[in-house]
Image (cartoon, rainbow, N blue to C red; front, top):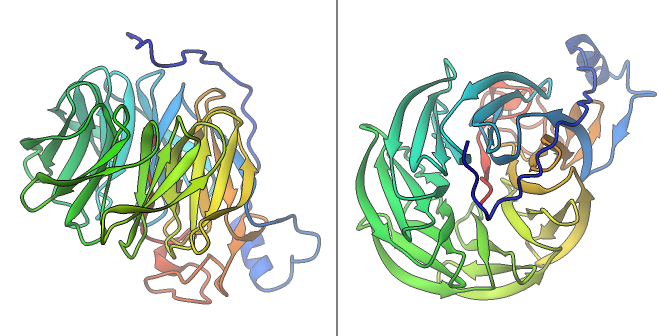
Amino acid sequence: MNRHSSFDTRLTVPVRARRLLTSVAATFAIVLGIAGVGSVTAAADTVIDTIGVGEFPLGVAITPDGARTYVSNFGDDTVSVIDNVSNAPIETIPIGDGPFGVAITPDGTRAYVANFFDDSVSVIDTGTNMVTTTVTVGEDPRGVAITPDGTRAYVANGVDDSVSVIDTGTNMVTTTVTVGDFPRGVAITPDGTRAYVTNFLDESVSVIDTGTNMVVTTVMVGGGPTGVAITPNGTRAYVTNQFDNTVSVIDTGTNTVATTVTVGENPRGVAITPDGTRAYVAHDIGDLVSVIDTGTNMVATTVTVGSGPTGVAITPNGTRAYVTNTVDDTVSVIAIDRCLGSLCIGFGSLVGGGSTGSGGTGSLAGGGSLVGGGSSGSASS
């Protein structure tokens, strides 16, 4: 496989270490109070698991039911599929050349993966975990995001300063939008009306009207903008600036920078919890994740993860963050809330903050799965 000079190719094959899966019987025993004494308790914002994946993992996305995590492995042209209950990889999917960003449709049936060296997007059927089609896009695609109604995928093409818009019904590019210099990350507002695209080389964010697919404004941010995530209420966009070691917080109503948060060195991916209270920022220098309190826009804590953290995604119930570590070929699992064994507890629910679906608050498995339902997070850039 070819390699691009802007990437660190120090790929390693680390010794894989995995914890034993807590059994269903033990889980129910904890719920009943039988096995509570002596169980290992993890404090909030600590790493509870490390998962070995492919070479140089970059992008990460979680299915809407919270059951699976898809990780793009740039170094060996694969996608790893992780079972989020056992925190173990269950499948490896051959993909295009240099897989980068990854996004999953709202119905959970397909994953879209940008292939950096192929100038393409691979479409994975998540039922069979096979590539069903490949879509040709612009040069050096990186970030990818899908509209809330699932009808379109927006792909940032770094070299030709454009965003390809894919019709997910036909899997054809319907239009191409010219944006700023070297676009990397892309995120779409919860109402689906705007796409925010980070332009790495001109310190800006292009705002696309998804109705007309035209850039309606450009927001100046910090140096080297890379990752972008939007709060669940759509009022703010958080943009990581690699060169400045900052995060710009954009007010999406006025499209101006409301504040700037100083974080760790070389911030890359960013994801926001479903309740909108915290933003998780991965720093590939320092091996840290900064946790920003979105109420104060200050760093509340930092979490040490694997080597070279880049991408981050958060489970739909907000109890765990999955972070790709490019140098040691792993994914770190952060307990966002307090965890007892494999069981994360938050806001009165045994599976995390206000789970949706048939379970609801106080249930064992809201949203139809042990780890919740829905998806939040951003791929790396």
